[in-house]
Amino acid sequence: MIDAIEQLFDRQIRAWPRLAKGIQGLAHARSRPVRIDWFDVFIRHIPHRVASTTAAVDQESIARRPCFLCTANLDPEEEGIEFGSGFTLYCNPFPIVERHLTIVYKEHGMQQIAQRFGNMLDIAASLPGYFVVYNGPECGASAPDHLHFQAGSRKLFPIQNDLQKIDGIVVPNYARNVFVFRGRDRSALVERMERVIALLANATGKRPEPLINIALFFESGKWVVCLFPRAKHRPDVFHSGELTVSPASIDLCGIFVVPFEKDFERITGDNVASIFREVTLRDDVFQDVAARLEAEPW
Ligand SMILES: [Zn+2]
Image (cartoon, rainbow, N blue to C red; front, side, top):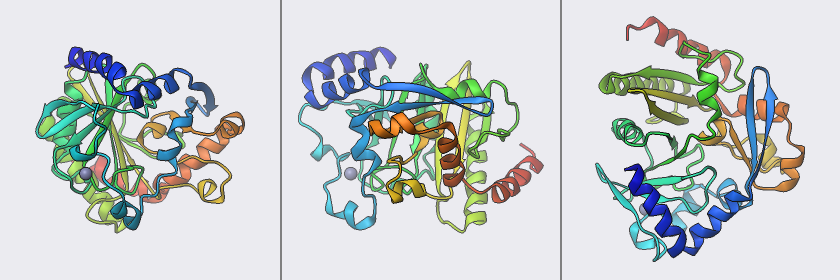
């Protein structure tokens, strides 16, 4: 699969101008680490992400635009690789990381993780060296009306390094609240995720799917799953115009995207930490769910 992806990129960079432009944009992207507590977050300035960062994702706007993930609306040069289970993998023309992929379900239909978490694990298992992410329909998916995942190279993937120091299902003093599950047993992980999602739906009253982002990867025969329960989609600084940022899975994994240079120059670790705190689930609710999970046999 990895060889086929390398060949797809080679072909598509030559054939598809929108992708070539995106790859060039990424090559010029500047990154700088900011230290927060015991970990780093990499601020990455990517001008071509402005449309995603500011995308209108309300139902009315979504209903009015043609779906950019439906086969009929793809650029004519765009080519995919069929993945199995009804998914096709495409090069993402607005990359945040190297080898950024969009993994799209064959049919147009609501972005939701129910019954699909196993597919996500399978995708990760076929992509060594990659991460796979899911953005909930109200948590950064710019196509909330069409089921899709994203994937990308873990060449820079800060959360992976951070987690090497952690054993439990929560990460202390991490600014953002995240559940971490590790395992070799696919069906046990699927069951565990369904349980967490049900607990979060109960705790937040948000059904059928609570606000979540998921990032996972597969290494040495084991999956590592990070589930970020969210409090809200966009931080107050976005609405006030102070900072044009709208964190989704990749940002929460430690690559924090800023489309505007003025924001790149001035954003601080404190800004990032307070945005993470604001958009992930409140501590007391998070700790309640964590305590329930820890008390259950697994
Ligand atoms: Zn669609």
